[in-house]
Amino acid sequence: MTAIDVTGLTKRFGRRTVVDNVSLSVEHGEIVGFLGPNGSGKTTTIRMLCGLLTPDAGSGSCLGYDVRREASKIKQAVGYMTQRFSFYEDLTIGENLDFVARLYELKPRSAQVARTLDELGLTDRRDQLAGTLSGGWKQRLALAACVMHRPRLLLLDEPTAGVDPKARREFWDSIHGLAGQGMTVLVSTHYMDEAERCHRIVYISSGKVIARGTVDEVVANSGLITFVVRGGDLAALHARLEGLDGIEQVAPFGATLHVVGSDAGRLEAAIAPFRNDHAYAWSRGETSLEDVFIQLMGGNNRP
Image (tube, rainbow, N blue to C red; front, side):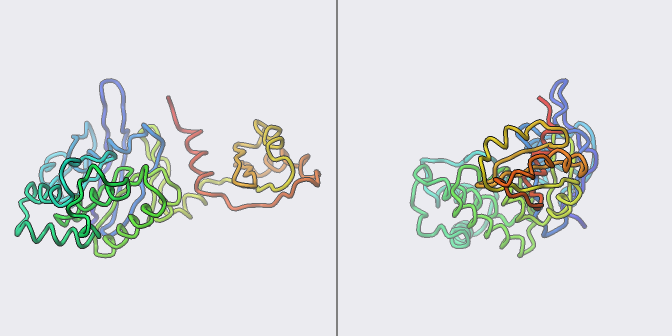
């Protein structure tokens, strides 16, 4: 049985359709990345999955419970980490976790709190006020609160926004550890390196799913061809290439330019006059996940 199996989820606010016929399937123990631009419908979809919003259309199950009729049971069985830190900043880490343990009626409460503190590396900071924590430690506290009741499914809504690379890596180490114990994870993110840490990814834009699969599958199915340019005045070259027929993206990557198109013949014709300039070195490159997502955003995003 899959952890998430929904078809045709739709949510409207007034005349605006925020989630439009979304279908999603996630296997037990799988980490799935949920990607898309701001306003694409990621958060609304997650809230329908965890029972906080009722779909206007569509059907399916989350952890075996019907997403329309059994929302209260879903809420008890999942862990949901929101975009914003939502714990009491004038309470300590230990007091915040004790409060969460009371909500879930965990017994013995003190033992459950101690176990969670130990598992998330928070024991030495249990008496520190939550409001004095750095972004990375706040993130760890939020994750601890989400998993202390041993949920079978973890829903994470842009959990690493605003934290440093070291904290992000440690967070993902924890996520993979939880998945290794059988927990299922659906995580929304804007970071391409985080997307590549997921088993599969799903890309949503304007409320519709427009790409899904492993990272390699999504890149391969994009049909994009990428050339990498080095040397010379890349800023000047960028200006000359941009907007030419057959060139769909020109983007600086460090000391190189990525020149991207979906039609090999038109792309080759567009760059041919510039390849004779010995100030630049051209080579066929690998299309990156970022190239693909920029392409998807440009073709499918709406105001």
